[in-house]
Image (tube, rainbow, N blue to C red; front, top):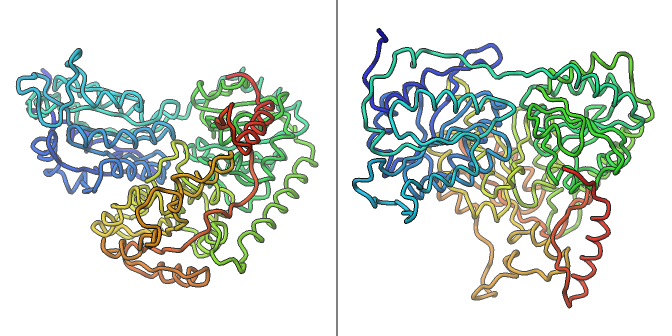
Length: 623
């Protein structure tokens, strides 16, 4: 007879999560490190009851916004290289829908986060209930159905026994490198409270391991055969290299075979900036060295990347005759653009491809050219970052100061806006896995929330941080989501936040004006405002202080340098604010396919359209 235990569905769910483990560097640790939660209608009377009982085993952290909590969970997953997971828990209705944007971030970036949201009543007896959105023609639909478009795994528990299958399947999805992404489970209020006789075996401790699928032999052979034909091979290293822990293996492969390599935005940080085979970031936000090598390449090895348009220059960066070898755990990505697929884990696939190559090496001239191009690029960066007589510093100059002050154990965190391109080009990674740029979904507001997740991930068992996230954020993103400054003050997780105030949405203004449209509604000076004689800028330092943080406004680069030294000594989150130039950008990188009106009376727009048509003629065809 099966031994059972009588628990509510909410209690059983929490007990199951507490008994899941994983191994990181040989140490057995909880698979679920904690819960970010805001309690409200739909989760406060049942799930909170279960979590309160296990708060020393599965800690619950109170956030200020459901979207930012889920973004913090994503930052944590990145810092842990997808080997440990956080839960984000919301109430019904708007609390749940707040998490949808964060789910999109996790889905686009292939990152694990478990999203739990309250749901309306299965029995429908009290309908319509508080925060319910009614669908007249389909009463089974709730706002939680909105997560289907941004979840790798989706379920709604309508019977307490269903978690016996749903929870293990959610975990399998989140840990599968080919299918990794957010898992969403809706928890109807009347089902959370129902008691059920669960098998005791369901709660047995389980240690999960992340699979490393090996590629098929025939795919390895074909990839090796194709690579041996290359005269100018080139490697693109993506986020999958980082999450596989294959950075060192990639670097050794590139050095041994004489093939230079670049990194995607998600992949940046797998190796240090000065590795002899490395040529900087790739694509629209990349280096001139990477662009020139990509344009000349005849065989491209793309590893662990979904080949987003910012990597490929909207598929104009490569010769139309170039051949691709796509190494990826997901066949969907490995088969893109008529590539020779190599479906498997990055580390395992590189090792097997290396074995199949025998004594083959690329022409030494390829690496020599790459190193010269990269040396030229670094000299260009030195000039860009050098102090000047300009009244307001550029992003490149600010990044240079912050980068210099960062320790090897500190992680730079940023996201949408002007800082992605500027940090991808200007930030010199000092130690592997210390750079996090969210650009898979380009989500404004990730920066500070993601920094909280990184700070949590950098905390040891004794509560001491082993490194400090350095969050770089523009004034636009700061205004959009900043409340986790207060969260970190409450929880004791320190960040250093550098606010670059350029007076609005600077980079999108650059795109707008670059396509011939006059500046409109992006910079504050171009927005509809009541009194242009009043100051337009927020006192961000005062605002941060009001949330309990240390803060300082910096007057120029020398002041910022001194402030960074001070910020490393403080005992809490510290915010540094500096005015930056909204019109000075680091040159370099590929072009981008954007929509430009086909018909317009403005000459500047007609010229931009003509440039786009010329650019689009270079695009590769295929899917």
